[in-house]
Image (cartoon, rainbow, N blue to C red; front, side, top):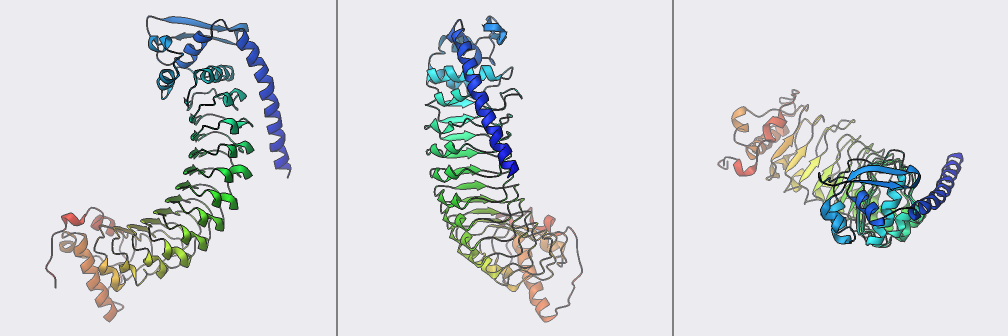
Length: 440
């Protein structure tokens, strides 16, 4: 409770500072000798022309810089399309102060700019954005990543035209409630901040397709995450999540879901509602089992369950018949067997069981006709002879099928532990290069 009050107090102080700065900026603006000269110098700091040196000076020495002007942009600085395209993607020779940033916003607003690229362009003491940001009513893309921003303007929601917002690698501790008013937002990158929660208005972002919340401090997500019905890619890596809300199953458009490096002990049954999901990565969690609904993920092509606490792999996983890549290696509670129906994964191309204690492959393993990469380092599987491995991946699959047949008759046959053998056996073979063998 005290922590929440402290954060609210910080925000109030920041907003009051905004107001004082706006008054100061207005006074400075009134004293500028030439608006065009300011605009040119702020936009064209990075592309000097050896024949043109000009000194920009704002009253009381607040902004006094020796800069060089790009002749082409100097002639067309009032042309918003040209000036913004020339500005996008360039590197400053110096970083902007808060005063320079506020002036830049003023002139970009007058030019009707639609794209503003400020990645790593701000001085380290610029911890918030001037309120004049919202005057950029035509802005569709804003990139302020890799700075030291701690707070966004409280009236951020006035940027109605905004489609893409990148605030990656800053110091944000929360988002303004008004962000939910930017209902046309499709891409939002909040990676690498200090966020613990999302505002209640976040559920209004129904057009959001790409959302990156990785490397923050979330220990839970709001149930309202299910309102993001257009969401196609969600990145939740490197947080402190202990569970996913059941409403995650309402994000029916999800294609890619990354939840690596969290504290998940289980997945909700509603995960099976994500019928369009193609990639699901769950490395470094605490999962002990998979929900039965996993079999409903008929579009799933890639599943990474490595570095968890799985005791076994459910047979229901073998219903995901479009699976091409499966990683169940390096589980902290040793897996001792593969599902007997593993052969149902007929188009599986890559399988990693490294560091598990799987001694025998199931009989259906021989049906993995598309397998081209099989990693089994530090497992007690029997090694095929070198003359077999030279024939390629499918020759090894057939050999292992014979081993399975023999082990069914002689369960204790050759169960010696081998190390680091399988990655070099199959990882470099593709089926197109496999030498055909006669069918026995």
